[in-house]
Image 1 (cartoon, rainbow over the protein chains, first blue to last red):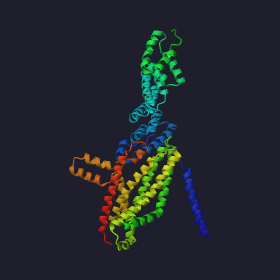
Image 2: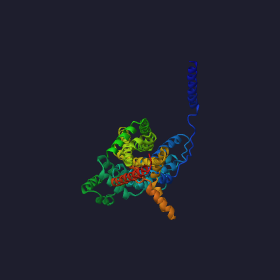
Image 3: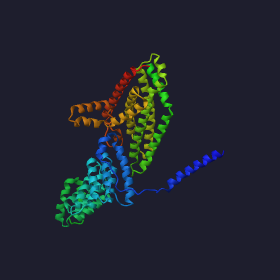
Image 4: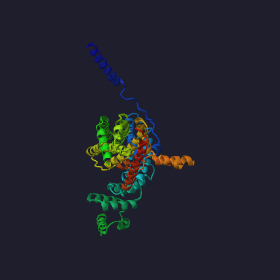
Length: 248
Length: 254
């Protein structure tokens, strides 16, 4: 009996020791911002049937790494390599490109994020998200006079992809006008007018009204190129809106 | 024919009752359920994570079952000396090997159907993704594992069960890297090493020709003709390996 009690006590003491050891350990060792990321080429060569699985595993690691350092020390030294690895192993993994691009902004590398999106668009040309985000990157992080036009070109490209939301063409038109390409902006607003509902059409008319010259003859001349881009009835309705304050 | 059926049914009953098999399957199902947790930390990629890691779990545990059960099939009969009773009757070595293979194929089919069906339902219920490609992928994994079962049975006729298991796993890994061996045949300037690489490339099963998991997660487009050709190749490979196993087994004296 005494032996049994002693045995139980020893077991309980051991169990208590195990729990105590674990509880008293530091909850989390400080993680290093620099981690080893293998070359994508290595996995491309040696794991053909498990490439997407490895990419997914590294994607989860990348998300954890970002979460750990973005709110901690702010150092994301190995993030570019991680994004590169995941997107090269799984070239159609849209979310990895998009997450990676925005995470690279937090890493202080918007240029790298822009390149990641460009690579993603090259591999997924039917996905409008890529040119739409490229437009945002060009506008937000671009420098110099040409950034508005660069963004407008991306938005225009995104708007041309089936399934893209209609606001992209409006963004492209607005940025073209802002960048000084009024003629192009007029054509784009014409397309917005053509494909829009009542509200969107009103918005297009307002924008065209502000872009077009005030003098009637010059206004006529500026709006003329729209004739070949839309059905006659729509063109006449637009002209009626744009010239309603002018004497016949 | 009756002999093959009788051995196959007996092998199926014997392997399906194995408790180790049940433990492995339960563990695999737990791993598949673990995909839900992985999906929850993936920023909205739950379906992809569950499918991808679920199929890896199906492959890994299917491989464990295939290799360890197949390695013991012939050996157990020899060690328990039941093979003497069997061969005292008019049972051919070919019927014995074929029956054992078919029996284990049945068990493996049941195990993979369970795991694949479970994964399919889980992805459907949790991620709302009703993808029949999961079932196609599981079918492809099954065909791969049939080749591994055949290879392991072949090795078990040559040596010990442990050696057969280890070699079976090695062949699976080598099969995944099949295209690298092909690259070696093109890289070398030496005709002898080039020729040897070519022989190795032909001997090991080509598991890297079709990446079913990548097809499931939308990474590549799988053509049905490609899948059909690959399946036919692997089934032909199984026939050749089983014939070799029978040849080796025939030379054994009991």
